[in-house]
Image 1 (cartoon, rainbow, N blue to C red):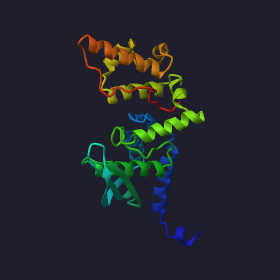
Image 2 (image 1 turned 90 degrees about the vertical axis):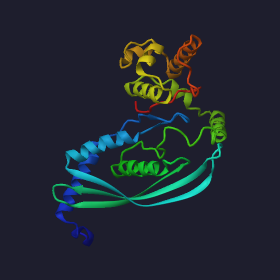
Image 3 (image 1 turned 45 degrees about the vertical axis):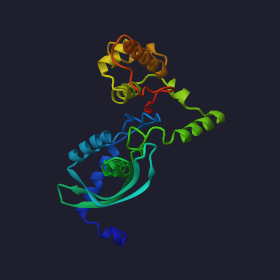
Image 4 (image 1 turned 180 degrees about the vertical axis):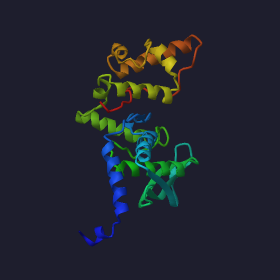
Length: 263
C-alpha cells in the first residue's frame, strides 16, 4: 500500500465506496432539454439533481456546495446594446458520509456569458451540474445551461456559415434527425419543447395534432417525422389566429424540429 493510501481512514474508504455505488447506479440521464435557437438536446440540471439527490439520500451521503469566489469581466455588447459579462464562479463541493462524518471536498469552476442579473446563478448551475456529471461519469452532458442562446441574431451569421459548410460537405444531420422514429423519449422531448418554448398547453397541443392521448406512442405514427408534426402545429396556429383565436407565437421555429437523442 502506498504512503498516500495508508493515510486514508477506514471511514473515508466507506464514503468512497458509497460514491462508487452511486456511480454504478446511474446508466445515463435523458436529454430532455431542447435549445430552442440551435436545436440540440441537452441534459437539464433538474434531471441531474433529481437523479443524484435520490441516490445520495439512499446512501446517507450529504452534498454541500460552497461558492468560494466570483470574477466578472465585460466581453462586449449584444446587438441590443446590453453589456455582455463573462462570469466565473469558483466552488468547493463536499460529500459527507452521514453515518461516519467522513468527507471529501473537490474544487470546480462554472462560467457563463450573460447580460442580465442571472449571471452568477447560471454560472453556479453550470458548475454544480457539470461537477456532478463528471464526478459520476454520466455521459451526454453539455456545457450550455440555457434553453436559449445569449441573444437571437448574435451568432446567426456564424450558425449560417456552419450550416452552409455542413450542407456542402454532405453531412447535414437535420434531415436524419427529423426522420428518426417516434420513440417514448422523442415524444416527451417534442411535447416538452412545444409546451415550454412555444407556450402551448398539452391540451392545445393534442387538439392541434388531433391526438387524443399524447402519451400513446401509436398515435404519433400518423406523422411521418417531427417536421410533419411541427407543420401541423404551425398550420393549426395560423388557422386559429385567422379565426380570431390564439395568436401565432412570434418565434415559431422554422425548419428542422429540435430532437432528443436518447433512442
